[in-house]
Amino acid sequence: MINTFVENQQVSFYALVAEPPKFDTPNRPGAKEYMDLYVSDKTGKIMLKVWDVTESQRNAAVVGAVVHVSGKVTSFNGKMQIKADNVFQAYDAVVEDYIKSAPLAGIKLKDLILGVAAGISNDVLRSITLGVLDKVGDSMISAPAAKSMHHGYYGGLLYHTYRMLEIANFIAKTRPAINKDVLFSGLILHDMAKTVELVHQNGQASGYSLKGRMLGHIPLITMWVERYIVDNGINPECEEVLLLQHLLLSHHGKEEWGSPVKPQVIEAVALHYIDNLDAKLQAAEDALNELPPGKMETDKVYALDGVQLYKHSLTPISEVKNSNSFGGQ
Image (cartoon, rainbow, N blue to C red):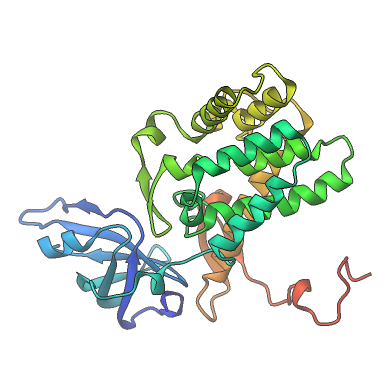
């Protein structure tokens, strides 16, 4: 629905509140407060500009709630938004009808990832990986992988993990120096503490929890691993523990990006770049998929340093009938 809107169109639709509202008052005598509110559905996200905001409209702007919106599609700085005439909470709406979610169901993704974890051959790494996943439990099914930069939707965390495993599996087959057990264990666990770091409902992250702000997901996941090995009598000095903790601590790559140490083993180098590659490609793919019909250029994609992507007309090779699986050879 949202990705079909065109400028000057009068619209009336239902959508999910995607982000906390922002309020401001114009700097002029007698001006009233206005609200900027991002809403989304399965096709995309758009900002509402609500002038002279009322108390009921303010109360409707709850992240994860469904609202009914009426207004006119406008454009500001080349980006579409809606000048909203009215916004009210739709209490009878079915939330699931408006939730953007990963292409694969969260329950299926969880089962797939648990299967990979169970297949880790190293006893110590398999035990830790399965043990920490058990602590996370079903909260991983709906969790997004980030607030907005990439995979910021229902099931995004597990989809990000699954797609990274696909890349890692290929790399491990072509790079014999990589220990697949170490890479897979670190990869599966690296973002799992985002289930606690982010405040999220129905796959929409509204901000960071107190632990998320005070600690962050990297220290949290490292603490979870430490607690598991202590509780289960695993030698904290064994090399598997050292390597796993190093992968978790270094996966952002640089101190200024949130990692206290840089990657110093080949599996940590692989994890950092696999993580970054999947995040960037998914951000690009999502931006292209949300383009309205007939539009060939995206808005600025901030996960890609603000570039605008052009959607070319050539058919993706994966969709070409009767093509071979590798480079058309």
